[in-house]
Image (cartoon, rainbow, N blue to C red):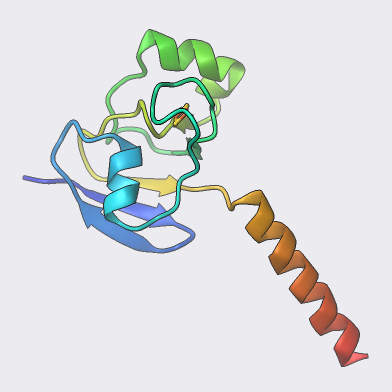
Length: 113
Ligand code: FES
């Protein structure tokens, strides 16, 4: 059975084979997870939040080392975290996209006055 991965806030779902990384699952679901190192646990840009990690394999030593204290706060590196069962993944918004969205919201509020 292939587990279903649910990506938030985009609300996209995809089923993948067990052992697939969250980064690859995100690509299949067409969810943009930032990466610069190509999945080598070097850039830390693929950090995602997974409150319930029962559907993920335990962290490897490298991931644990890279995340530091965030490893106990529900964060995972999407390029290292491997799927074992259904899981919900919170993907942080791209900073540029967030800045544009905030600017558009401000303009909208200014026009309402
Ligand atoms: S993609 Fe660079 S640390 Fe995961």
